[in-house]
Length: 218
Image (cartoon, rainbow, N blue to C red; front, side, top):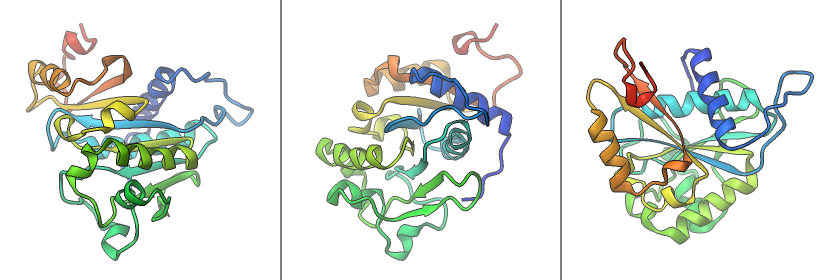
């Protein structure tokens, strides 16, 4: 998983997520926060194509550098074709197999970044309807919680997340300012019935020079 990003940007997003999760950010002598325990972060958007996969991968890397536990980036975007060569394309198990069988298989080192960073493909059984089965979603996330301090889900857009929305600990919403309006973003959140108390933050992609007031700007 090759990632090219602004390290400072993702470091800020990562610290914001950790603070939202309520974890004490008290680093050890090497500057790392203590390991967490089985938290799941969902990265989503109002519509496809807003840059959430880029944000999810960069966030996972930042979190692996900011605390001592293992972090896994998970391809959970079952509503779109896989964007990169994936272990699941070679027949290996992935998230969809974990959701149906409950076995944590198909893992691979991220290939770049901290040693504590892992990746998990979607698997060969991936289909959008699987995300709308609460029992399957719960089984998959239970396995991730048991195996990793933090799991970062590269999830579908909000309307296609299904049962994921009720099971995750925090969410990050990515908005492409060139194509998604304030009203459309708020409507997507309302339509999905996502608990906004679990929304760790909003990442404004391709933002204009002035940040809109509804996103905390002037």
